[in-house]
Image 1 (cartoon, rainbow, N blue to C red):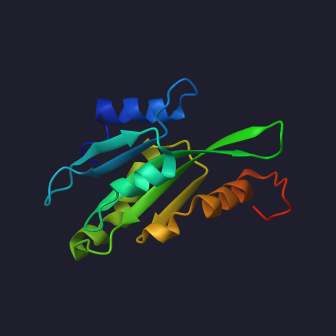
Image 2: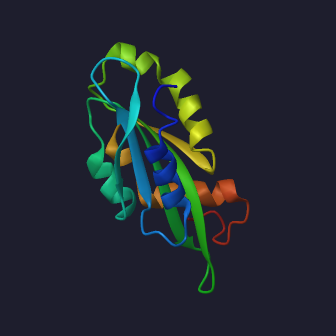
Image 3: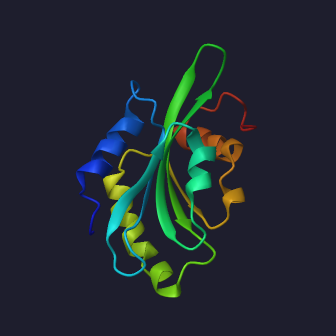
Length: 146
């Protein structure tokens, strides 16, 4: 996969995973309108909402986000999700490559609990994602209510 081995992607991935770094999301996009080269197109510390604002409706993009949530008053869990964004205005040939490319991206961003395919920002609701992460994580301290 062209570009996924770039040192800046590895550094951003490590930053999102680190408890000592404020960075909690990264975004990988295509370098150009044609071709298959992927590049790091953004990082931030504003969580899922900030990452959603960076999504482009005319592109396929891959996000990686750190999600923290409380199970009870004493414990906080940290989980990671991969977002496979297929914007509504994405060209057909670009969409066709997602099944192949998303597998490669998931291998590079290997430590994640869930992968979320989305083509509308409303599909990226933090509450829903926390519910899915709880279910994926095994222990559910809220009786499945999220």
